[in-house]
Length: 71
Image (tube, rainbow, N blue to C red; front, side):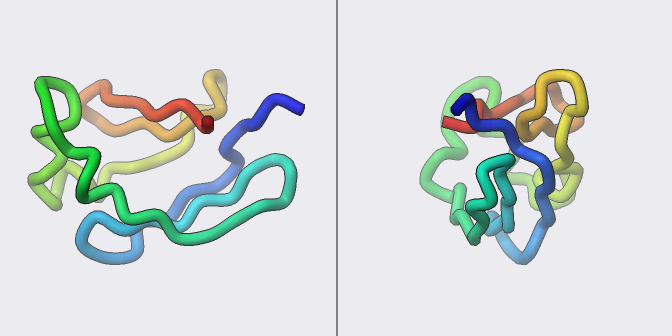
């Protein structure tokens, strides 16, 4: 089965709650992943809070163009 993100919620700091199409869900702390040109700007919590699911890609995206594959 190919994993797709179907729901994501900002919880606090750099922690999100995510639900996948296989029924799995849980909290993920992304603070250690916020490095580099694309993800570094997400250290700004206001930008990080723009997290959402892209309905076409079925993955997590932010307003700055960053995205995370479900894997």
